[in-house]
Image (cartoon, rainbow, N blue to C red):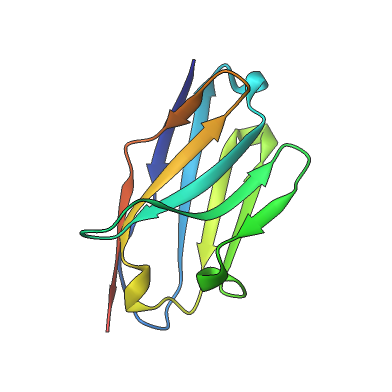
Length: 115
């Protein structure tokens, strides 16, 4: 089992920056990749960015050039640096981790961008 805990969400003005974090615990050695999903009010959860254990990275088109995903393996922590945020970036951000057997999810952290 893998447990994920997000932190760092909050209120930020449009054009500002915010960094959210996800700490993994438990069977972290089994993780093949991690990612961030976003769920805006009334919308489906969508992938924002992902990173594998071999550092293959992918971004949603809407955040390319503004968001950066990274990980610190020594701290079992994944980050999402969000720059030049927009009101449409508002939502609950969920951390996810996966291996060949399971997907794991955190509880989410709220990010609100004011215009």
